Length: 380
Image (cartoon, rainbow, N blue to C red):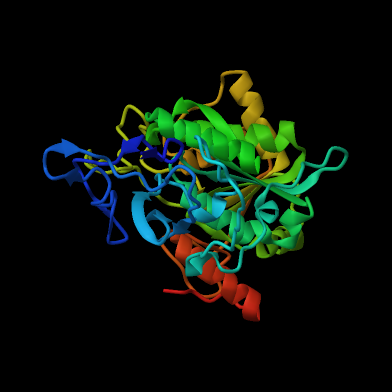
């Protein structure tokens, strides 16, 4: 018996490594047991000419198969596979199927409020009108659970569902081909991922910022372009309300602004910058990466400078945006910095506009609180 060809590497029963799934053995001891210890007589649960009842059950760790009430095999979910995503079961072999009964899949408490997969698919981009806001979300190929949390929560805001705001994930390739195949399947399912033509690496994230600016001004025409992360909760309504109230259509950088940051010169730091990379003692004003907004003209200028190969590349993407805007300012751009203290780049505080470092469970909790009483209260 072999199984799981689309759920991971093929495995067989009997197995030398009889690992457990949900405390059940991968292969029943009945499968492949010996008769009189003289020869192997593999047990097969189906008999020619006899009816059998087979049940495929969903557990916490994997699928479990029983035949006529006897547990036959159990196998763990492939990494990144959520059982509620399974919408088809195919049966192959010399089996005459007489009837099928499918019942609802049990879900974890995280998923109880999501019933319709179509509700998670992206809304088509408007063809003849500009967007109020385009949001580009930094992600990586293996961050499926984070993307699902975003799809279930703040991508359900009415402004997103109506097409006034568009959201896309920007992810690079993975070194593991299986992960890339899973990502491609996800792209076809949800239609909200822009695949970057490189293997993801922290030093390349600034290219995603450029891609977000290009998408927000060329693929769509957005009045404002926002960058965020896949572990950040964005209150889309509050972002729209604030930029509308400020009414700054040109030269805007909105977010948690840092006015006097210095380069990290410690070589052990994740954010280490050598004097050769940036000789100046301080950075120009920049907005923290978990959530900042620029006006269309700034995003378009980034794209133009990129085409002209005059854009100064810098590996810290949020600081890079600050550097680019400072250079635009020297060239005559009128720049307006809008500091937003409600962007929390190191966690969550009540009243947040953006809350960073939120797990998928916390994202769902924040959304449930907002839906219940309209108050932005943290869950941790």
